[in-house]
Length: 132
Image (cartoon, rainbow, N blue to C red; front, side, top):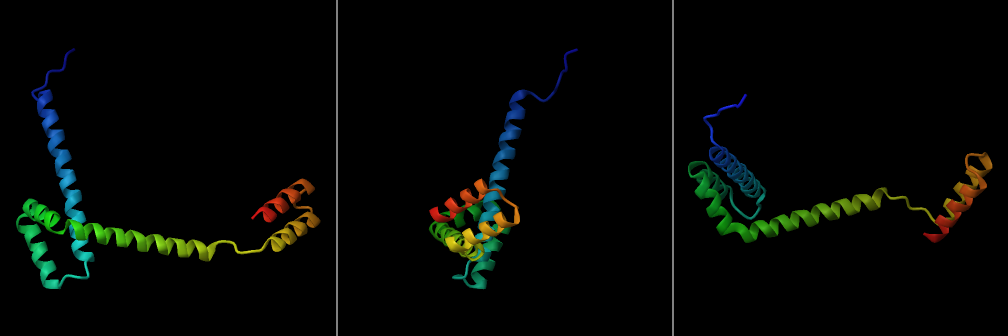
């Protein structure tokens, strides 16, 4: 049985294309709104004007903002990324194990004495501690 449809392949293509363009526009809109709300260099009045422009003329507002503020958006995004990376680095340093090799060997020796590890495992831990 052959299925007949009244929705030709070209119309399916155009529907998918328009849907894709709409999703990209929504993504850009949320990026612009996020940038507006995170800005500290603009007054509240200016932020309200940008948001009104985005509500009244959504497509034009997004494109005008991108054209006029693209450099600042990039700089602010890079600054946020650097700040997040430095916070992550600081956190990783704070939770990292900070012990000297002698301490690690002493812990491994106590595990060996308790029978928790074998002599071969003790030697591996010892070599690792001395290599670090």
